[in-house]
Image (cartoon, rainbow over all chains, first blue to last red; front, side):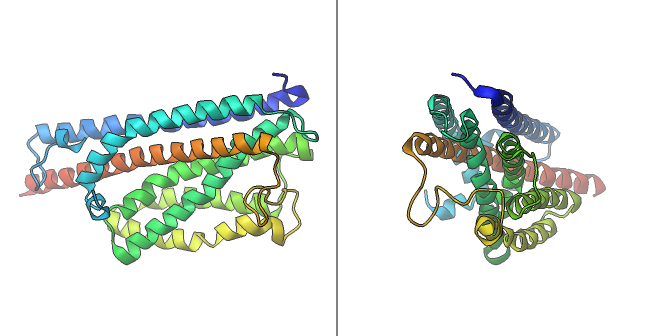
Length: 59
Length: 243
């Protein structure tokens, strides 16, 4: 696949999109683990929701 | 499961836990197919291989507007129906929409340099998309600046609805004003003017990026629901200590 004289523009575009998508996936995954950990920590300290459901019920 | 069930955040979390792996797998598959088709697409007779930038630029540009449209519907859900997930949906969508808008601007700029001879031109299309990006950042800042979630939700909803005026301006800017940017060639009266060799990879990439958005959005909504539960528990803990 020859990309011609403007190959660097094409490659940079795809690389930027890939990097941004990976950053989004990483950020959302990290945030999920952080919130689950904070919820588990709070529940372990004895604080419970009025519904009485635990972090394990949250999917 | 009915729509009313989805209004319950706990049921929403159960549903997302079930469908997210499938959505992620389908997104990865479609992205792989789209990337192969983009790589195999022929060179354009005028643009050469730089036409390949279109396959990532256009889906990001479409999504940058679609996400604000979705946030506008969610804003109505917050202000009119007071749907419990409406603000969650809008707040979770904003950073993803901002990322798509940023990518539309940067890939457009990288496409513009070899084709137009410039990275940037202050014309109606580019300027209105830049304004959209700044509005996304403004909304994100607003949610972060206001501590009370219900006050932040109302203010953000109003700002989102005001900002929605920009969406038709972006869409029709190429018809209303003289611009370097080409007019619509896919979503236009009379059908697409694009050759199948380019249209098929473009549509596959558009569906793949749309699925990517749905996957990321559902995951971000799940995080936002958990964040609000953490906040509630922290307040319960603080009030328990105070008592």
